[in-house]
Image 1 (cartoon, rainbow, N blue to C red):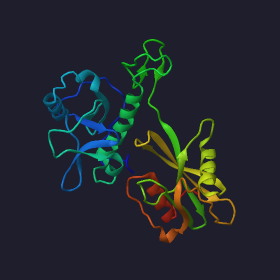
Image 2: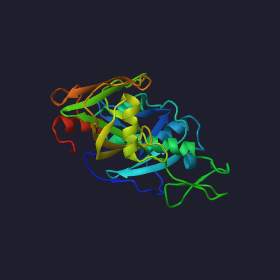
Image 3: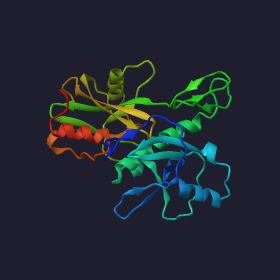
Image 4: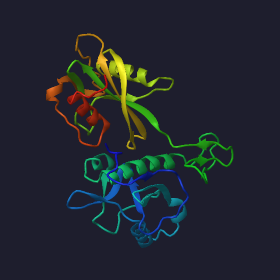
Length: 289
């Protein structure tokens, strides 16, 4: 999956460190991220030296202290986020691409870094002021945390739990497609956990809300961090409770939902998403029983 790095080690503990010239920098414009695509479809991120040069060309001489934030160290390289509005780079071989499309390229490790940085970019941007008293927050010296100097409110990165659900009925698996979204590929039932709700209840509720079916024998499979939504996906399999496959579709959420036989699934593992890996596990008969 996306977080399974191709080589090396991820060190995601926070540290106060200044970027060196060769450090990688993630730049964002809304939901678009700055990359260079090579001929083999691998991705390259700009270095700190390149971003500094672009900033100087634009006359932005004040941005250094507040605009660059450390993300993590991966495969012996430091990664940072540029918290300011990057604008168009001087090097036209770089361009902004929608974050959701980048997960389909070969550079799985770079893509993972960008998704995680984007998660933090949105969190930092949303917590510049204290939600309790309104004072300007400051980054803690030891932890990845924003602290209010007035009321001592501590604000940690938001991680929202959500579920991916493989509903099975014998040798058949329920697949669906979202309605009114740009993402049109096959997926499975999914949704965020509500306050005061166990994850198992989320599984039952989401299946009932989206396709009108009851489920039983809920069993855990695996998790995946998903920076696109700031979430942590929890994968579960469960069995249809009953014999009927009569689906009542929530058409605001889904365009279609249908049970497919194990030997004829219309989608396969892409090496990126938890959803697709769960499809492969079912296809190979290796889903948890």
